Image (cartoon, rainbow, N blue to C red):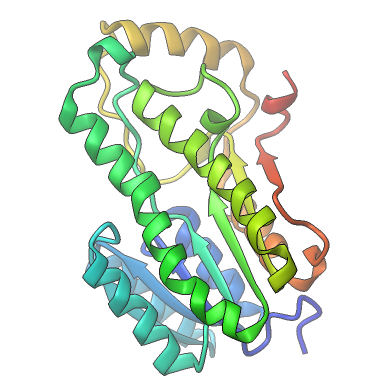
Length: 255
Protein backbone atom coordinates (compact mmCIF):
# COMPACT_ATOMS: atom_id res chain seq x y z
CA UNK A 1 0.00 0.00 0.00
CA UNK A 2 1.18 3.52 -0.78
CA UNK A 3 2.91 5.30 2.10
CA UNK A 4 1.31 8.55 0.95
CA UNK A 5 -2.17 7.41 1.90
CA UNK A 6 -3.42 8.07 -1.63
CA UNK A 7 -4.32 4.47 -2.39
CA UNK A 8 -7.94 4.32 -3.52
CA UNK A 9 -8.53 8.06 -3.13
CA UNK A 10 -10.69 9.90 -5.63
CA UNK A 11 -8.76 12.76 -7.23
CA UNK A 12 -9.60 15.52 -9.72
CA UNK A 13 -6.73 17.12 -11.61
CA UNK A 14 -7.43 20.10 -13.87
CA UNK A 15 -5.22 20.95 -16.81
CA UNK A 16 -4.36 17.26 -16.82
CA UNK A 17 -3.94 17.03 -20.58
CA UNK A 18 -0.33 18.21 -20.55
CA UNK A 19 2.52 19.68 -18.53
CA UNK A 20 2.32 19.85 -14.76
CA UNK A 21 -1.26 18.56 -14.72
CA UNK A 22 -0.44 15.42 -16.70
CA UNK A 23 2.66 14.76 -14.60
CA UNK A 24 0.61 15.17 -11.42
CA UNK A 25 -2.14 12.87 -12.69
CA UNK A 26 0.37 10.16 -13.55
CA UNK A 27 2.20 10.42 -10.23
CA UNK A 28 -1.02 10.44 -8.20
CA UNK A 29 -2.24 7.39 -10.11
CA UNK A 30 1.10 5.67 -9.46
CA UNK A 31 0.38 6.15 -5.75
CA UNK A 32 -2.90 4.30 -6.19
CA UNK A 33 -5.28 7.22 -6.58
CA UNK A 34 -8.22 7.12 -8.96
CA UNK A 35 -7.87 10.15 -11.21
CA UNK A 36 -10.31 12.30 -13.15
CA UNK A 37 -8.35 14.22 -15.77
CA UNK A 38 -10.12 17.47 -16.65
CA UNK A 39 -8.91 19.56 -19.56
CA UNK A 40 -10.14 21.78 -22.37
CA UNK A 41 -8.16 19.66 -24.85
CA UNK A 42 -9.87 16.34 -25.54
CA UNK A 43 -6.86 14.63 -27.09
CA UNK A 44 -4.62 15.65 -24.20
CA UNK A 45 -7.06 14.48 -21.53
CA UNK A 46 -7.62 11.14 -23.26
CA UNK A 47 -3.88 10.62 -23.71
CA UNK A 48 -3.39 11.15 -19.98
CA UNK A 49 -6.13 8.64 -19.17
CA UNK A 50 -4.56 6.11 -21.53
CA UNK A 51 -1.16 6.58 -19.90
CA UNK A 52 -2.68 5.98 -16.47
CA UNK A 53 -4.58 2.91 -17.64
CA UNK A 54 -1.56 1.50 -19.47
CA UNK A 55 0.29 1.66 -16.15
CA UNK A 56 -2.51 -0.26 -14.46
CA UNK A 57 -4.33 2.72 -12.93
CA UNK A 58 -7.91 3.95 -12.91
CA UNK A 59 -8.75 7.22 -14.69
CA UNK A 60 -11.54 9.13 -16.40
CA UNK A 61 -11.49 12.15 -18.71
CA UNK A 62 -13.86 15.12 -18.72
CA UNK A 63 -13.47 17.79 -21.37
CA UNK A 64 -14.64 21.38 -21.12
CA UNK A 65 -14.10 24.94 -19.96
CA UNK A 66 -13.91 24.90 -16.17
CA UNK A 67 -15.10 28.49 -15.94
CA UNK A 68 -18.49 27.15 -17.10
CA UNK A 69 -20.61 26.07 -14.13
CA UNK A 70 -22.22 23.26 -16.15
CA UNK A 71 -18.80 21.79 -16.93
CA UNK A 72 -17.79 22.10 -13.27
CA UNK A 73 -20.95 20.28 -12.20
CA UNK A 74 -20.27 17.54 -14.75
CA UNK A 75 -16.69 17.09 -13.52
CA UNK A 76 -17.81 16.74 -9.90
CA UNK A 77 -20.74 14.43 -10.70
CA UNK A 78 -18.51 12.21 -12.82
CA UNK A 79 -15.88 11.93 -10.09
CA UNK A 80 -18.43 11.15 -7.40
CA UNK A 81 -20.16 8.53 -9.53
CA UNK A 82 -16.91 6.88 -10.65
CA UNK A 83 -14.94 7.04 -7.40
CA UNK A 84 -17.59 7.27 -4.70
CA UNK A 85 -16.31 10.64 -3.51
CA UNK A 86 -13.66 13.30 -3.94
CA UNK A 87 -10.69 13.20 -1.60
CA UNK A 88 -8.26 15.45 -3.47
CA UNK A 89 -8.71 18.37 -5.84
CA UNK A 90 -5.73 19.67 -7.81
CA UNK A 91 -6.59 23.10 -9.27
CA UNK A 92 -3.80 23.28 -11.82
CA UNK A 93 -5.27 24.54 -15.10
CA UNK A 94 -4.17 28.01 -16.13
CA UNK A 95 -2.92 30.28 -18.87
CA UNK A 96 -0.31 33.03 -19.14
CA UNK A 97 -1.00 36.64 -20.00
CA UNK A 98 1.03 38.63 -22.52
CA UNK A 99 3.30 40.04 -19.81
CA UNK A 100 1.32 43.26 -20.28
CA UNK A 101 1.72 46.15 -17.88
CA UNK A 102 -1.60 47.35 -16.52
CA UNK A 103 -1.78 50.25 -18.98
CA UNK A 104 -1.30 47.81 -21.86
CA UNK A 105 -3.85 45.26 -20.64
CA UNK A 106 -7.10 45.31 -22.58
CA UNK A 107 -10.41 43.99 -21.28
CA UNK A 108 -10.22 40.70 -23.17
CA UNK A 109 -6.78 39.79 -21.81
CA UNK A 110 -7.78 40.67 -18.25
CA UNK A 111 -11.12 38.86 -18.35
CA UNK A 112 -9.75 35.70 -19.98
CA UNK A 113 -6.84 35.30 -17.56
CA UNK A 114 -8.90 36.01 -14.45
CA UNK A 115 -11.71 33.73 -15.64
CA UNK A 116 -9.45 30.75 -16.27
CA UNK A 117 -6.84 31.23 -13.55
CA UNK A 118 -9.01 32.40 -10.65
CA UNK A 119 -12.73 32.05 -11.32
CA UNK A 120 -12.50 28.46 -12.61
CA UNK A 121 -10.68 27.10 -9.53
CA UNK A 122 -13.08 29.05 -7.32
CA UNK A 123 -16.07 27.40 -9.02
CA UNK A 124 -14.62 23.90 -8.85
CA UNK A 125 -13.52 24.24 -5.25
CA UNK A 126 -16.97 25.49 -4.27
CA UNK A 127 -18.56 22.51 -6.01
CA UNK A 128 -16.21 19.99 -4.38
CA UNK A 129 -16.45 21.36 -0.84
CA UNK A 130 -19.82 19.80 0.08
CA UNK A 131 -18.46 16.34 -0.70
CA UNK A 132 -15.31 16.91 1.35
CA UNK A 133 -17.32 18.40 4.22
CA UNK A 134 -19.61 15.39 4.19
CA UNK A 135 -16.58 13.08 4.38
CA UNK A 136 -14.91 15.19 7.05
CA UNK A 137 -11.64 15.37 5.13
CA UNK A 138 -10.07 16.57 1.91
CA UNK A 139 -6.95 18.05 0.39
CA UNK A 140 -7.04 20.87 -2.16
CA UNK A 141 -3.83 21.79 -3.98
CA UNK A 142 -3.56 24.82 -6.24
CA UNK A 143 -0.90 25.73 -8.77
CA UNK A 144 -0.03 29.32 -7.91
CA UNK A 145 3.16 30.87 -9.30
CA UNK A 146 6.16 32.98 -8.49
CA UNK A 147 3.86 35.71 -9.82
CA UNK A 148 1.73 35.12 -6.74
CA UNK A 149 4.69 36.05 -4.53
CA UNK A 150 6.11 39.07 -6.35
CA UNK A 151 5.27 41.72 -8.93
CA UNK A 152 8.16 41.04 -11.29
CA UNK A 153 7.31 37.65 -12.76
CA UNK A 154 4.44 38.30 -15.20
CA UNK A 155 1.97 40.88 -16.46
CA UNK A 156 -0.80 42.58 -14.52
CA UNK A 157 -3.56 40.05 -15.24
CA UNK A 158 -1.55 36.92 -14.46
CA UNK A 159 0.01 38.50 -11.38
CA UNK A 160 -3.40 39.49 -10.04
CA UNK A 161 -4.83 36.04 -10.76
CA UNK A 162 -2.05 34.23 -8.92
CA UNK A 163 -2.11 36.63 -5.96
CA UNK A 164 -5.82 35.82 -5.89
CA UNK A 165 -5.01 32.11 -5.71
CA UNK A 166 -2.65 32.72 -2.78
CA UNK A 167 -5.41 34.58 -0.92
CA UNK A 168 -7.94 31.87 -1.73
CA UNK A 169 -5.64 29.16 -0.36
CA UNK A 170 -5.06 30.99 2.92
CA UNK A 171 -8.74 31.77 3.38
CA UNK A 172 -9.75 28.17 2.69
CA UNK A 173 -7.19 26.92 5.19
CA UNK A 174 -8.60 29.11 7.93
CA UNK A 175 -12.25 28.57 7.11
CA UNK A 176 -12.25 24.79 6.85
CA UNK A 177 -9.38 23.38 8.92
CA UNK A 178 -11.75 22.36 11.74
CA UNK A 179 -13.71 20.34 9.18
CA UNK A 180 -10.61 18.34 8.19
CA UNK A 181 -9.93 20.11 4.89
CA UNK A 182 -6.47 21.33 3.91
CA UNK A 183 -5.63 23.87 1.19
CA UNK A 184 -2.12 24.49 -0.08
CA UNK A 185 -0.38 25.60 -3.26
CA UNK A 186 2.84 25.19 -5.14
CA UNK A 187 4.46 28.31 -6.59
CA UNK A 188 6.38 27.11 -9.64
CA UNK A 189 9.34 28.94 -11.06
CA UNK A 190 10.10 28.66 -14.79
CA UNK A 191 9.06 25.18 -15.85
CA UNK A 192 9.27 23.32 -19.15
CA UNK A 193 5.63 22.99 -20.22
CA UNK A 194 3.54 23.68 -23.32
CA UNK A 195 2.28 27.06 -22.03
CA UNK A 196 3.21 29.80 -24.48
CA UNK A 197 3.62 33.53 -23.85
CA UNK A 198 2.34 35.69 -26.70
CA UNK A 199 4.25 38.84 -25.80
CA UNK A 200 5.70 41.68 -27.83
CA UNK A 201 9.30 42.35 -26.80
CA UNK A 202 8.78 46.04 -27.56
CA UNK A 203 5.90 46.47 -25.12
CA UNK A 204 6.67 48.09 -21.76
CA UNK A 205 5.65 45.09 -19.63
CA UNK A 206 7.67 42.33 -21.35
CA UNK A 207 10.73 44.56 -21.73
CA UNK A 208 10.78 45.39 -18.03
CA UNK A 209 9.82 41.93 -16.72
CA UNK A 210 12.48 40.30 -18.86
CA UNK A 211 15.20 42.17 -16.98
CA UNK A 212 14.00 40.92 -13.59
CA UNK A 213 13.46 37.33 -14.68
CA UNK A 214 16.78 37.08 -16.48
CA UNK A 215 18.67 38.36 -13.45
CA UNK A 216 17.01 36.25 -10.76
CA UNK A 217 15.86 32.83 -11.93
CA UNK A 218 17.87 29.63 -11.61
CA UNK A 219 17.55 26.66 -13.94
CA UNK A 220 14.37 25.59 -15.68
CA UNK A 221 12.33 23.05 -13.77
CA UNK A 222 10.47 20.04 -15.09
CA UNK A 223 6.77 19.23 -14.88
CA UNK A 224 7.69 16.12 -12.91
CA UNK A 225 9.46 18.18 -10.24
CA UNK A 226 6.38 20.34 -9.82
CA UNK A 227 4.18 17.23 -9.70
CA UNK A 228 6.28 15.72 -6.91
CA UNK A 229 5.45 18.75 -4.76
CA UNK A 230 1.75 18.48 -5.64
CA UNK A 231 1.69 14.81 -4.63
CA UNK A 232 3.36 15.66 -1.32
CA UNK A 233 0.84 18.39 -0.49
CA UNK A 234 -2.06 16.16 -1.50
CA UNK A 235 -0.84 13.24 0.58
CA UNK A 236 -0.97 12.23 4.23
CA UNK A 237 2.73 13.09 4.43
CA UNK A 238 1.56 16.73 4.52
CA UNK A 239 -1.23 16.13 7.05
CA UNK A 240 -0.10 19.06 9.21
CA UNK A 241 0.56 21.41 6.28
CA UNK A 242 -2.31 23.84 5.68
CA UNK A 243 -2.38 27.28 4.08
CA UNK A 244 1.17 26.92 2.74
CA UNK A 245 2.49 28.35 -0.50
CA UNK A 246 5.45 26.16 -1.46
CA UNK A 247 7.93 27.68 -3.92
CA UNK A 248 9.24 25.06 -6.34
CA UNK A 249 11.69 27.30 -8.11
CA UNK A 250 15.38 26.50 -7.53
CA UNK A 251 15.56 29.29 -4.94
CA UNK A 252 14.04 32.12 -6.98
CA UNK A 253 11.73 33.06 -4.10
CA UNK A 254 14.80 33.45 -1.89
CA UNK A 255 16.39 36.09 -4.13
